[in-house]
Amino acid sequence: MLRISSLDAPPTSISENQGWPLFNTSATRQIEKACASRLPPHTLMERAGLAIARLAMALAPHAQRIWIACGPGNNGGDGFEAATQLQVRLPHTRIMVSQVREPSQLPADAQISWHKAQQAGVQWVSNCPSDLSPQDLCIDALLGIGIHHRADRKPSDADQRLQQLLKQVTQSVCPVLCLDIASGLDANTGQYLPEFAPHAMSNPSPRHTLALLTLQPGLFTAQGRDACGQIWWNDLGCGIASHQADASTTQPVAHLSTIANLQAKPRQHTSHKGSFGDVAVLGGEGLSQRGLSMTGAAWLAALAALHSGAGRVMLALLDEHAPQGIPPWPEIMLRRPSAQDWSQPTVVCGCGGGEAVQAWLPHILGQAPQLVLDADALNAIAASPALAQQLTARAARQQPTILTPHPLEAARLLQTSTTAIQAHRLQACLQLAQKFQCTALLKGSGTVIANAQRKIWVNSSGNARLASGGTGDVLAGLIGALWAQGSNADEAAIQGAFKHGHTADQWPADRPFSAGALAMHLAQ
Ligand SMILES: NC(=O)C1=CN([C@@H]2O[C@H](COP(=O)(O)OP(=O)(O)OC[C@H]3O[C@@H](n4cnc5c(N)ncnc54)[C@H](OP(=O)(O)O)[C@@H]3O)[C@@H](O)[C@H]2O)[C@@H](O)CC1
Ligand SMILES: Nc1ncnc2c1ncn2[C@@H]1O[C@H](COP(=O)(O)OP(=O)(O)O)[C@@H](O)[C@H]1O
Image 1 (cartoon, protein in one colour):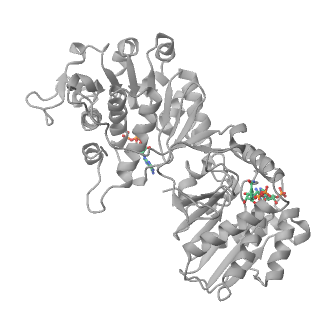
Image 2: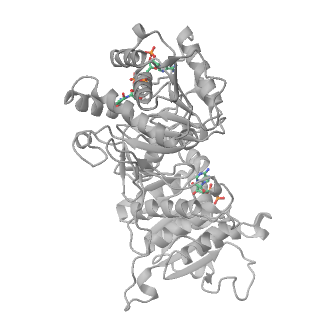
Image 3: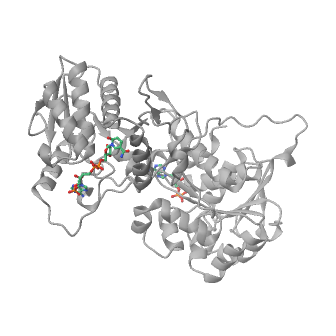
């Protein structure tokens, strides 16, 4: 869960709020400049140091040693400032600092904080102390938002020293508190820079990150969640957490979606099954076609729609030899694809669709009033310029579409590689939304949602429990149900992604997890 830590009050959860702004690094710098210009010099770094010290004390109340690895820029400056604050507050704790650069080579603010730490009596050590224990704390103040890729430069002594300290942070036996963002990570994308990649995900110790001033997308998507762990945020009194001024002149690149109220809306007594929309699922190639049955995927989507409040759920399997008789869930109405009227319901198309779904796509793209496209429907569109054109044309006919690709499907749709998609998840999702004039949802850790009007959201829920076959089909059905019940396309995608992840986050430890179980227990 994301927490906000105020300068004056104990940290509180911000999960009750919706849509926290995420700023990229250049917007953050603009906000920082505007904020700093209204304050006495060095105030922001002092506030950062205080916020870090308070969080450090809360995270490691029994620490006997706190080691702070300070980098060559102002992230390092925050580390020196925090060292001073901790030294003053914790006279019986050993506060130790390691540095990358000589003070004369530090930026002005960081130099001031370096001298303060010296005067306060902080201990300087050349490396991570060997006697740190799991009760102690390591603070990663090596690199923040000032990181940049420098492929063309031979590593300097300072660069090598930085790598050495980062390796020690990564191997720390005690919890790590990262300042701003885990060192080595690009705050805009959540990807490690190539020269820092080996440090990725190798640290088994608990991780926390205190974001200072703004929240950034890289904290929440791609490699960010593993690297940064529990996110804390302090806006340094600049009013962003209370949705005030500075941020209003600088546009966020995206919003973090957290849904406050997951309770189903109260249903009026006069309502009936027709009040909550119809969802029709088309997918599930049968065993007889190619010997690769995927009917389960379509069932999972239908089941998720059923348990997410849709009034009626129809399932059209692309399987000539589907068993007759009472279906496993009798509430779900089985249809032949040719017998279903596709012009009325919210359609979820593609789950387990195999090759068989291709033939149906021209009809579905033409007819469906609201269409969720997943899996093999996306693969078929990626392979066919005619289908792609038909998809794009839907928006002008007021027939909205939601695409739910995972990174490989997104790569096919954009004719690029999965690596390129993952390197810039927000941009890739936006590109999909614009190319196909729809709402796009790029799945994976930190699911991204974007629309053709250039709005982007990053989902804040979910965990690797979801990394198992069929959970994407559940998501497609869930989104279809929310859409059928009256949400608009963006809301259905945002709420669906959040609810899907939230259900996995709340999953009882003693209940076996599977996509089928997820579909049955979607948070109501
Ligand atoms: N901004 C804010 O809102 C606020 C910011 N605050 C804090 O300041 C931080 C930003 O400080 P910053 O601008 O000095 O950047 P920072 O992250 O310390 O990195 C720059 C240093 O890293 C080096 N370096 C870069 N890439 C490298 C590489 N690949 N490999 C090796 N070295 C590399 C680079 O070297 P150079 O390119 O100069 O040789 C330079 O020395 C921010 O994250 C937050 O913690 C708070 O005080 C309050 C509000
Ligand atoms: N490590 C993870 N963290 C968070 N969510 C994940 C993770 N792995 C998978 N998911 C989620 O699980 C779902 C998997 O969907 P998908 O890849 O389409 O699988 P399938 O085709 O088997 O249904 C997506 O919603 C994705 O965001």
